[in-house]
Image 1 (cartoon, rainbow, N blue to C red):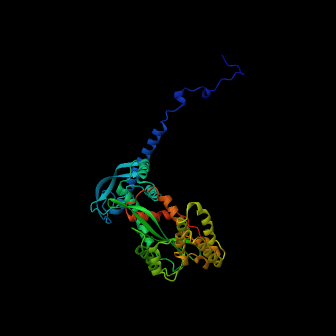
Image 2: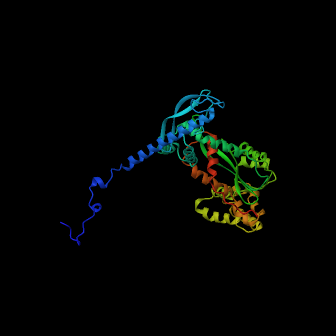
Image 3: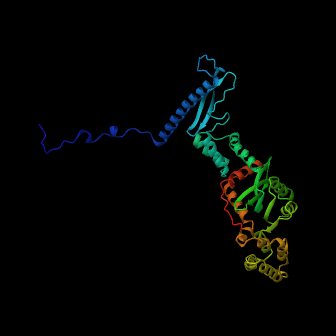
Length: 395
């Protein structure tokens, strides 16, 4: 019987569908992810093997079974190798070879088993201070394999080469300020782990730009070590420095005296004040620190000298050891007054280089022990590439 005109028959597509027809059988997310990675690996294998066959064809100058006047060699089958990729390991990749053994594919480096993007990423992790164990975990997640010790060595090899180029680069002839200080790390020497100090020279050019000029690893901070670092600066054309800012280490001062005799030197007042206060009882340190700090904050050197004399007279009998410490290297305490007032806060102490060390330490504190002095120097150098060194006023 025909349906009444006012009655509406539901269209077929609007009828409820069964769960079988309406919901496709999609794999679980984890299974789909594994499936997708497998497909990517298969596609990568096909493309890489095809590229290598084309490379060999160009190399020998003839297609398979073709005789041409341009032929320069003959194919000799394949060898297999594994390749770690971001989608997981590709096993038994067919790599073509020629009979003379002269063909080398450009698809991957001969001994590099990691895609360059992955190698760069792992190297960056090493540089940022990530532990070797953690790097291995990340590599396992990304590629399905963890880097071996030799692979880790190769990852850092390029960094070492770049560091060696950096450490012999020519420098400017004239620097406005030179900060000298050292930072300690633990380095393995054979079966033992010892403390190694990285002596560091931080320069400020005539426009106020900071730059690390030199790094040198030494077993201890002595005159010989500092002399080698300072002589290295001279060998790389540094002949004029307006001011050297240092702590009071005897070996450092002796090296400066022998190699930059005429250069003005500023004793770090933060270190000096700390040394003085160590000889003051805790109950009085805050008051004495305020008086001592007030000396350096005078606008004129003459007023600073008056305050210094008054301070020494006040505490000479009560705390002779504190005054003895203050008097050591006294001629270099107020050198900063020889420079424009705008520079004073930046040159009264070694805070500029201490701040740099703090940034380096934050990026390397996950590395408990470096395997060699070279690796320590290289990682410190690589780390500092990302550290912003703010300009300071120099006139």
